[in-house]
Amino acid sequence: MEFIDVIKSRKSIRSFINKEIDQDKLEYICNCARLAPSWMNKQCWHFIVIKNSEKINAIAKASIINRWLKKVPVIIVACADPLSSGKKNGIDYSNVDVAIAFEHMILASTDIGLGTCWIGGFDHDKVKKILEIPPRIKIIAMTPLGYPMNKENIIEKSKKIIIRNTKRKSLREIIHNDIW
Image 1 (cartoon, rainbow, N blue to C red):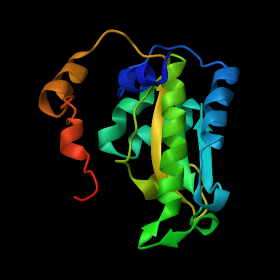
Image 2 (image 1 turned 180 degrees about the vertical axis):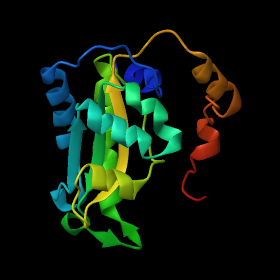
Image 3 (image 1 turned 60 degrees about the vertical axis):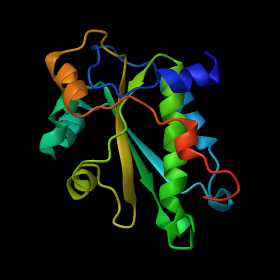
Image 4 (image 1 turned 120 degrees about the horizontal axis):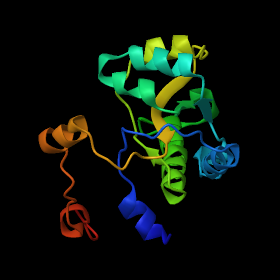
């Protein structure tokens, strides 16, 4: 796929077929994240790849809005070690570093036919406890990972109608040349 096609075809997937993901595909996705740029090349990221159905179920139960996760084949949790990055002008670059690496992972997944859904809304404390994440480590985001189910269910259709705006702003609305 051309890179622009990968970007255009990436969308949030919440329904997956019951099919195991090959280890070589997981390694490819993780390697793409590993190659991302970071603050002074500190690479503050850590990724927890969860295939254990009991852990997946526990994460799904940790927040009412994420109950749908109980049927996903894999969850990847993206974490940051703030001590392995930097801060400048009030910006914690560990968040930025992990977001860049995670997006590499999301786009790599799309490129090889896997679906993802960037999730930021979850109970961080509960997930940290479930996954035994050390106190100083921050969870930045998580995503399910799997082969997308082609058929949209009623929940997916409702979400599109109620909350999802797929129209993108024009370049004229977001690009400023030389000054604001």
